[in-house]
Image (cartoon, rainbow, N blue to C red; front, top):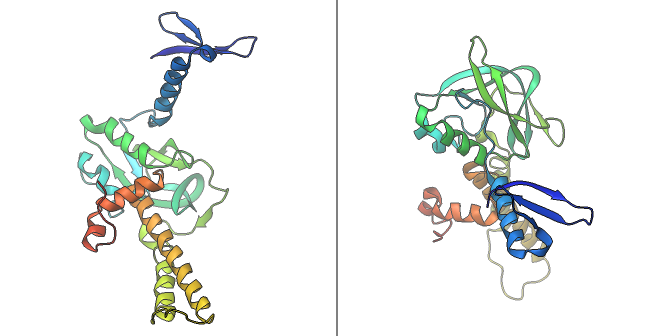
Length: 259
């Protein structure tokens, strides 16, 4: 059902006004309330696109060549990605880079030109992938050129963020997937070299808890990989399903394929 507007009356009831002029009180019509909820859900799920989708896309994060999300938009490109830079700054939140346009440093990324028949599809994929609570669409100028490009900038680059000193971000340096996994490996080697025997004394509890910590840290790394590879916006169950279809995970028999 398509609506023109909602309004509340003096009794506190909400009315649903359709385009054909029907005026119905939602509190008196359960089916109408369900329709309204579905309309709202559909609207909330719609990806937010940049104002001008004709512009190329400047990516400094997960959609760069060599990063985990590049595979989703590579088939939509008109030409090879162009390495370039802009002026700004980078901050990290939840493992993701946020561009601060107020910065004065060099931020290195890639300029992506999409095929004319894939502009909307490409930007919808990008908007669906990136969390809207962290990013918003904006436009920037590419350094040493007159090119204007769309970019996702951080909504708030100063709250719960860590300053990033380098000019170029890469997911390959994510601490959870590097130092975190090294800690897991070290704890397994130190505390998992022998089996737990039935009826073991209390001295084994410390070893058990160290392995439990390693297990939880390992799953944190797996969740981080799934977020960077398939989208930070996915629910845990959706991430598990994606991992079940992941060729790398299937190759190492890490996660069973989920139908």
